[in-house]
Image 1 (cartoon, rainbow, N blue to C red):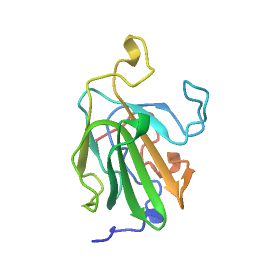
Image 2: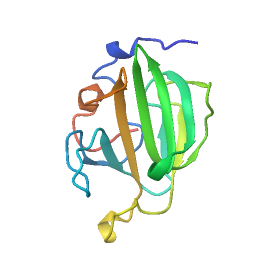
Image 3: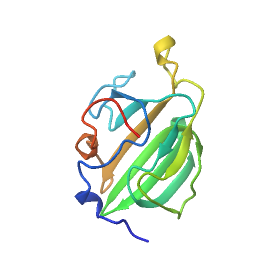
Image 4: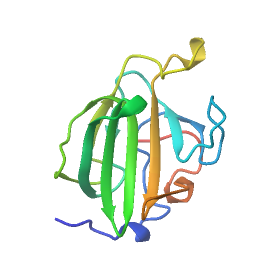
Length: 149
């Protein structure tokens, strides 16, 4: 199987992978002062995560402090990294379609977050082109911080 359209042709038409609110964008500083290389979405507990684009799963499992990490090869040198889920429902080598359920968020708050308004899980999404982080902002169809679908 191959993606229906090359990844560089879907710019501006992708749906965010979960319902929620964007709380950090590419280039923002994280709580430790490092520059964010992706975006963070605050989701509801146990929210369903879907594939943002067609591609092959190249990694699925725990990774350092990221918790559960999923990497999708979208073709053309592009990779999509998703982290913060409690459960991943796809395996390396599997081909996924845009919008296909691939994971579930957890019940616990994101590491390092304190306070009532920060008690919901956070999904981290990063796009890479030829191994380098790129701003995922222009790829999304949604113009607001609210996610649909």
